[in-house]
Image 1 (tube, helix red, strand yellow):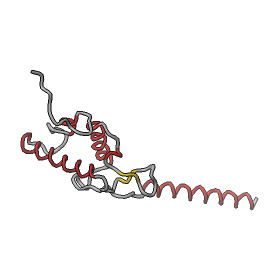
Image 2 (cartoon, rainbow, N blue to C red):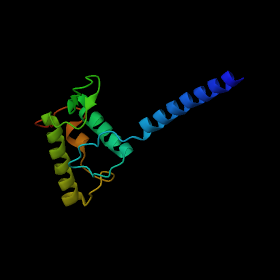
Image 3 (cartoon, helix red, strand yellow):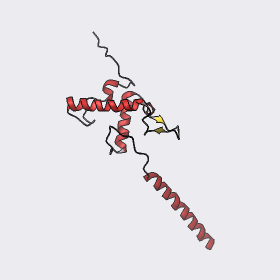
Image 4 (cartoon, rainbow, N blue to C red):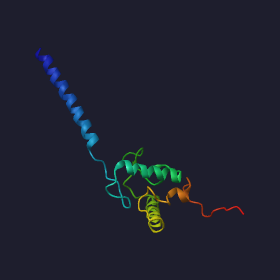
Length: 134
């Protein structure tokens, strides 16, 4: 009987340790995003929504702007500014915000008239000219 209680205590301690490890893993903050244009206090869901908007607007995947992690090449290093496309995206975000503020009196993306898709139309690079039928 004494052995059974020791086994129960041991199993209980192991389960508790696993539970605490899981809690720590889900509540521990990972690296902060490297935000230079977007608000520093943006929540994760809004950030993901904006990034998915880039995916659709430019017809690209995340690795278009983000480099592979040096520790795990299967993951991306969202902190790195190694790729020039990331700075180009920041410049484009500033440009569209200025256009929307000046001409459409909007600072938020919700009611903006100009967005990435306006010029990119699902392509990595916007067309340099518009073909207008005669």
